[in-house]
Length: 159
Image (cartoon, rainbow, N blue to C red; front, side, top):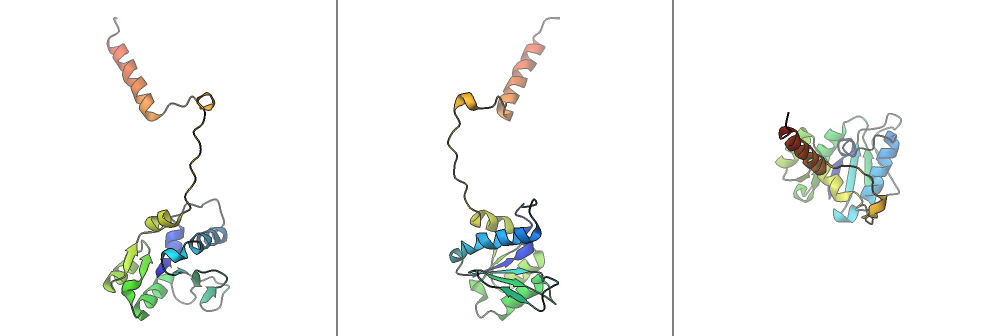
């Protein structure tokens, strides 16, 4: 079972060009396709103001909780504390307080970036571009070699 500190992980994803709601939905969608990897996933977000009490989003294999009246951190710690078997829980967060609490209860931990790399869709390799279509861009290795060669020529230049 994986419990995700929603905004803590979401903010590491780098989807700055989308609205917060679009980022949340994208994140939920990614985790929904990979929930079997963890034997179930719960994402806990700090509550939406327009929602009364805690809210659980339906229509996804991932359980999504929007807290209200308590922080996501407190909700996660409460879930850990109430668990019959906290050793079977993995917590995804970079929050020091949650990590310390989880360690005290023998939960497994995964950092936000490690979770993102584990669940992010793998981009298919693109075929190598034909030589004639490649830019004349000079990479850093080639640029350094050119600079070193020019330095040698300038140092050996007769005055």
